[in-house]
Length: 436
Image (cartoon, rainbow, N blue to C red; front, side, top):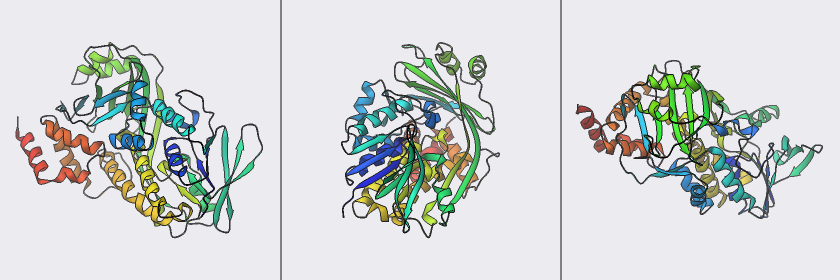
């Protein structure tokens, strides 16, 4: 079969990564991006969360390195901070600081815009990939039950058609695909929502050489009923990204109120570090009213020639840092299936395969979401029991480096969550918590 054209809607991480994979099979790949793309790291209008706190988990970084060899070193050269999360994080939670241990689980800390720019520049170098920025997707073209292209409109043109053998919807949370399905007599995917009402406020601060921070990422995690958390994250150009998050409509403090807030924390290190940093940008707010999971795998009918990916299928609680990595794992599954199937006709097996990954991420996030009584949605099974055990793990991690190291491996998706329930690990948690 001759695979001619593939169209990707959305120029974010999901769209860029899937374009790289598609370029190995299709003669031409066209990325449709509504924002104007500048030749520099930027926070785009259509990606308003791009200026907020992000963590590129090691599992996701490995996927990026697989598709774009040398990008890890490239990000380092651009100022991204190489950090072992075992001994490079100062994490206060459950009335103590995690017991640091070298894990050799290194990841990179930087602004989200730096990551996006590095990946985009790599994609721009692929000869058969074209990025059309300042171009808005208007509608799908459907012929005989198959999506055969899209109608688009650029900033300086009338609407026009682009034909394709496959369309990938990587437009994120605001995707129009569910509504399109409903309007065109297809079943609409069942959607599960969890109401969390989180507000982020983020600003750039200076990062003085030396001092108490010692280049570490600092995290203060609130224990319910507390609702305010703080992150001081080292990023490129010797800066700190300072993020304050409030759960369930709690308004995060900024500026002098933030200093007063951290001054009252049980660990004074946060205040002593922040007071030496100079604010270099205004705080920018970003709100997450809910997380959502669309069950495409339950659909009995779906048009050929169309596949969604990333946040179109599932947008997770961003405080847990799974989003980029979840998208990377979906791209890996797509690539594997593409070797044996026509991508335009593989929606059923594609949805089934990625559901396993998404379920793992959604479940892990759900347990954390329901630590708060105010969270509204479908509770996962055994949530109270599991969360009590997680409390015990966090308390043990404040005393035992091995426990913390294993917790880190699960958190960055290197090991499955089930490893936290092995007999040996259970004993380590019990023994650590018996210590006074």
